[in-house]
Length: 363
Picture 1 (cartoon, rainbow, N blue to C red):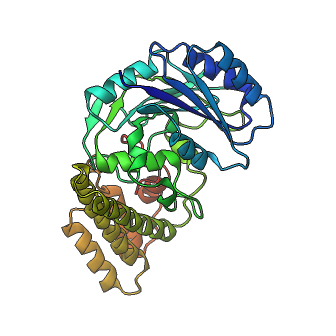
Picture 2 (cartoon, rainbow, N blue to C red):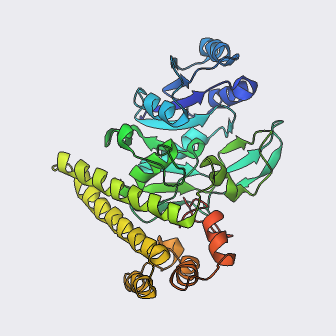
């Protein structure tokens, strides 16, 4: 039977930790282990975990960082130490559906996928229902490589993935985040990037976890949860375009190098295809930068014409930019007119209907 490691990252999460641990204990399929990666807690977190380890019917391993690493490095570093063939990520304040591990593992194996994700519900500090977090998932679906939005993600606490995924490319090489300045790519976005380019992703519509909203967080629409998780605003549109151009080029190079290092592995073929895909993304954002920054109308218009010829503005649900970005590039870029309605909403919130894996700044 395929073994599953539950990876729980903690830092001063004593208040709601017991509820999360109990939901893991009550799973219909027991994990091979619970691996707890603590990033410098100073409250009762470690005592609660140690007490739980005594009564749990599966091994509980605890790693205590001597210096805080930050959430993403803590998750990714600990994932490399997990023993299970599959890893399910867990946040310290959430609560799981009793069949979360069973349903995700079944889908992952049945569809031969690299990543399985699901929808969730939102709860407050008292575990009262706040809303539904669909993440754009409307039905159980299998997505082939490079079909979902390139800049998307799914929340970490909804992710279950094959451990080998993180062995393909050293996570320390993952590069900067395309949404947040001066920050490394977040762990869930890194996992999504690898699975999106190299294999299948399966999405489950049933909410298999309850995500707790901190007391200080506003009761925002569920689609904005990913935006808050990204750590801030993207800044100006030119800044966002520049970060995406650099990130796409970096990802293309990572995949091309991976394919060169493992030429005889079947996945190398897919890595080369993905490298070409991300090189194309880099070219798209080079042209979009020209549209919004070139001094002459002729340069801006020529760049837009090239993007139109490439089919860049096709349907958003097919991984293209869509009509809202076309309007933004035409009106705000080529014509240099003030443009806020569709363009601003597309930049900040991703439109009223979220696609699977899309982030609110998925431009």
